[in-house]
Image 1 (cartoon, rainbow, N blue to C red):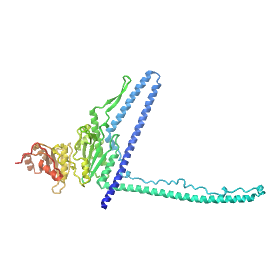
Image 2 (cartoon, rainbow, N blue to C red; image 1 turned 90 degrees about the horizontal axis):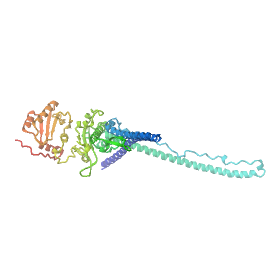
Image 3 (tube, one colour; image 1 turned 120 degrees about the vertical axis):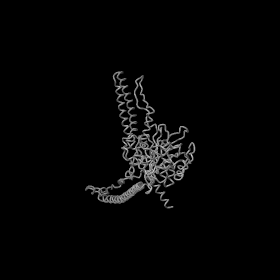
Image 4 (cartoon, helix red, strand yellow; image 1 turned 30 degrees about the vertical axis):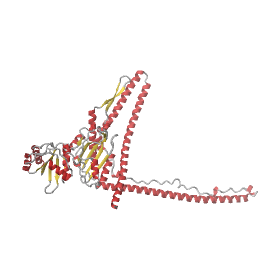
Length: 553
């Protein structure tokens, strides 16, 4: 019970720490946006001054003709300014990836710490000692010779005695008042010292939490690690209009970070290319519309840039090389056109291996082609907000991860999903995860230059291990012998110890005979595939073939 209470207390402290750091990340982002806004405001102010100067010139023009000419020039200049604003937005959206490459890390463990600076002691005037009373302030002038003639000495002695009593009382009051002042000064100083100590203790406590947070991240504790990367991504500075809503899960057993990212809406891309002044009638400034095809291409490029940039930020912000693979799941908040209900479809689902990603020259690549090379699941029409179906939904993964130490990447797959309903790319990912569940290290190869290889798996068994080439065929009819022969050719080229053909359908007798003669090819057909899914993934999958496979003779 005590152990559970301690864990809960630590989790609560980490939660408070995360909240504070989220606020800090938000503040950093707002400060950067404020600087941008300030620069834009200064630019607008400059344009307003230029506009005012043009208006003043119009008023000062001597003739009507001059005034008309100045008016036309002013309107053309206004159209040019509006066009420049649009071009600035377009240029900013086109350079999202490059800006992310050049951006310094918004958060480090050192930057999360606070520096203690003791505030100076303010005595509040109590340090100023009032002047002590002197007898000179009370003493009377002695009577002169003329005053002494009429009994002045006696009166002087009486008055002097009275002044002496006043002086003594003033000295006593001064002593009492000064003692009170000194007491208040001491109390004020003690209060100051106590506050300084409390502030220092608070800073020390905060920095200790940061140290503990850093330790937890560096050893790869799932929750702190996910919190750290969420903070990094939330603090990344993007143009205005980006949602900045990120969730992350770290899977230590796979050294994988899974990020659920809210993509910007389609409206972030301007639908106006520029403005021009048309001199007819009173004249008007007319916008030049951007063709829908161009807007669509801009948006597709933008979200591809965001995906690649996020992968880059994950790998570069990794303090201890914790993340061997990163998965980016980009989704968007919309209303379903069919139901009118809120929906959040995924537009991009991509995984990247650190080693491969480190070879990319981000400043020179085309992000759309990069996603294709990474074998990403990409919406065929992201500008129409047409979603893709990821192999695992982030929310399902999150709910599973809260209750189990290890989580299969296919945990969100519906127990009766039809494998024939998967796209070829989705099926390749599914087969990869099946082999991982069977104890192999596997990964899907890139769609370009794959040499006919859908996946590569490594069996680390010291006696039977080695390189294994996998072909995944999501077919509803028989797989021809040419596919088996192609697999044998790739095995020979790659010097693989084993080849496996996985299909949702079946192969003919010639294919099985060829595999038997080869000796290192194994074929997994529909029924065996369903059995392996149940055995290793605990999934009761469906394969809705139009007709049952032929019975073997």
